[in-house]
Length: 186
Image 1 (spheres, rainbow, N blue to C red):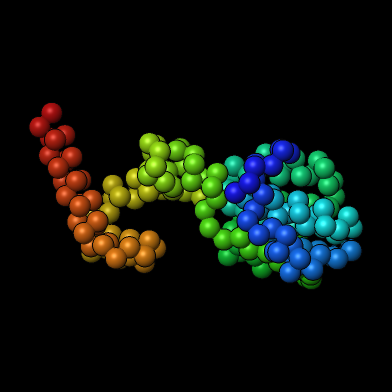
Image 2: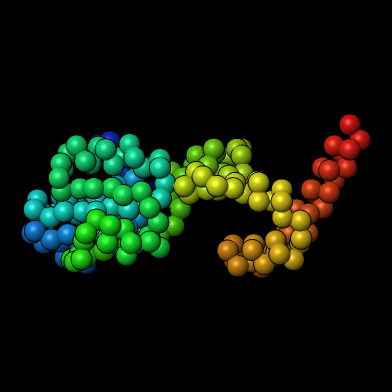
């Protein structure tokens, strides 16, 4: 990740290659399906002064970044808060029936990993949250209600691709039991 001098916090890795493969042309519409910090959207808009970008992201923390791009590129850019799994519905709602290119930069952003309040990393102390949209059940809430080690193990293995998922699940359940016993003693 490179630091930028402008108000966007970083330049995505391989951005030039991604934009070149996208073949950005005049009067075309592109979808940045994973807006993040806006580096790809900005690069597309800079590549051709007569194209438009619809950006999608599910993280409400990107709104400030999107406003910067909206101010600079006026009617050529629009951010929609939503999930890429709902891409078809989003485009239908916007009455868009043709796009000229789409870019997906999948994964958790460095900004999300570095923010201890988001709870995506164990490198910094913070709540165990892990929610992309900041609504619904946190990871801590989920662990509080999840009491079966085998179900927890399946989730850790399926989503985390963790080979030691059974051992981890068992340790979590044991920790919860010890914590519960300590509360009862007080």
